[in-house]
Image 1 (cartoon, rainbow, N blue to C red):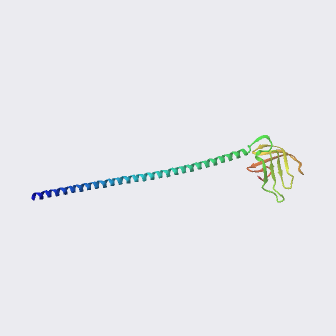
Image 2: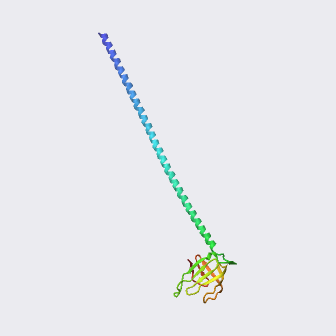
Image 3: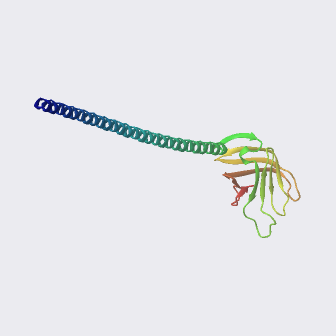
Length: 206
C-alpha cells in the first residue's frame, strides 16, 4: 500500500512538471510572436515615414522647378520686349536721320526733295480768307495756293541744301494777275511742318 502511494505521488509530480514546461514554452512562444509583430510594425512605420518624406521632397522639388521655369520665362519675355523697343527706337532714329537734310549741299538736284513730298496746310488764316493757304509738292513741281488768289505752280524744279534748309528754284506758270517767271523759295522743315523763310506761319502735312 505504501509503495503504491509513493508511485502515485511520483506520477502526479511528473505530470505537474510537464504541465509547467508546456506553459512556459507557450508563454515564451507568445512573447517571441509579440516581439516579432512589434518589430514588423516599427519597420512598416519607418518605411511609411520615409515614403512620405520622399513624396514631400519630390513635391517641393517640382514646385521649385516650376517657379524657376516661370521666372526664366518672365525674364526672357522682358528681355525680348526691351530688345524690340530698342530696335524700334533705333529704326525711328535712323528714319529721322535719313529724312533730315544735310547741313549744306550746294550741288543742284533736279526735282523736288523726297522729304517734302505731300500736301501741307497752313495753321493760320486771315478773317477774309475762305481757307488757309497750302503747299503741294510732287516729284516734278510745287504748287502754292492762297484763298482768293490764283495758285502758283513752279515747273522745272531743282533744289540745293543751305544751312539745313531746302532752297527750291523753278519757273512759275502765269495765272491770272500772276505773270509767272523764275522763283526761288527757301523751305524750312521741322518734322511734319514746313514754312517759307519769308513767312512765320507753319503749314502742317495732311
